[in-house]
Amino acid sequence: MAKKCLVVTKDIGGFQAVRPVADLLKQRGHSVSVVAEGLSLAKWEEAGYGVCGGAPMEGALDTKTLIRSDLDPETIIRRIAPDFVLASAGSPIGLELTVCSVAKSLHVPVVVVNDIWGSDQRLKGVMPNVVCTLDQEDTRLAAGYYGPGKVNIVETGSPTFDTFVGQAVPSNHALRNVTSNFQKVVYVLGQDASTTAYLKGVFEAVAGESNTLVIVGFHPKFLPMPEFCMQWLQIVKAAKVPVIWTTNIVTSRQYMWYSDIVVSCYSTGLVEAALMGKLAVSWVSDVGRQKMAAALGGLTQFPLVAYGGACQVSNVEEFNRISTANDEFKEGPDSSVVDRWEGEAQSKDRENLRTKLHIDGHAAERVVQAIHDRIDVSV
Image (cartoon, rainbow, N blue to C red; front, side, top):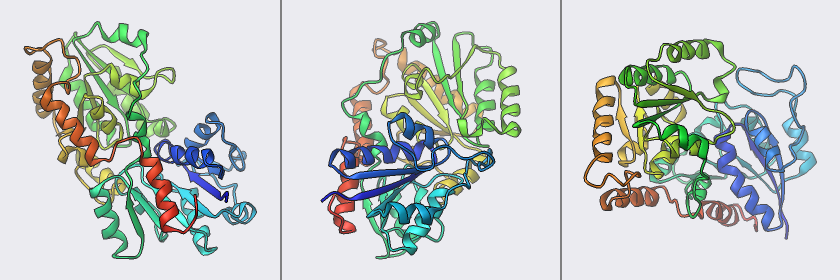
């Protein structure tokens, strides 16, 4: 029997984690309605989904938080009458929290899919029926947060990474032609206020290296915030190496593919970079640790570091050390190997990372199975 699912998302990360589940539910004949705000709204429309309420009405959007105020969650839930709500948890959280709160008050089961460690904890005051976690560390965080036996915690892995199984990154000849002219390519993957320290640090580390190209991409959520962007633009403007900016024509995965090093603080992009065999660098600072703890359930070290999938640095000297080691690996006896994880040991490390994060192409299926098993909804 077909069931009705109401999806609610805000950020791109949440969209990427939830969309594969929504697609699978539709493929199995179930009804999927979407309510969205923030950067995820346009993504759902691009994917062919209608969004309840469409774009925010004039004056109903906070341009800094991207939270909308023109929708009444109770009206939407009563009209759609979903059998369950499927949610992500963005930052700062808005519609996801209000929809899930109202759903629980109306006795509609809530299923939360984490797109990063501890993201479910942003649903303050909401006790989901099911939380789908990334791995053992994410499961540990959820169990400690909710207490024993209060929430069904299911270690599904993130559906975001299902596409890393059996799918190659599409080539981009223009980007390849540009990057092939440089000995080293560093991709700076922007985030929040933590970006300032590593953006400045990377340019200080590579200053004067004419054979180094830096690709800079700011997070679109922070582009409307001049207090960040003006500072970041000044740092880039003073750079003493070649720089190119990211565009919407090329995907972040393509930029990663043609890079040697990917730098961020706690972005899931570091996981993607590691899975591609790139040197993933978590550059931490006092601000970075604060932001990471707030976003990742109190963690102050990106879990990928403990897994051996990323290096953690906090200053120029540490970055130069691991960058030099990476250069020496590329120029070693087997210099024809472009992917630094193609050797036997490196390939084993990457496989271990896939195992820890349950990256086997079936995470979305496990989420659907969790819905079926844990909230008594036949999907």
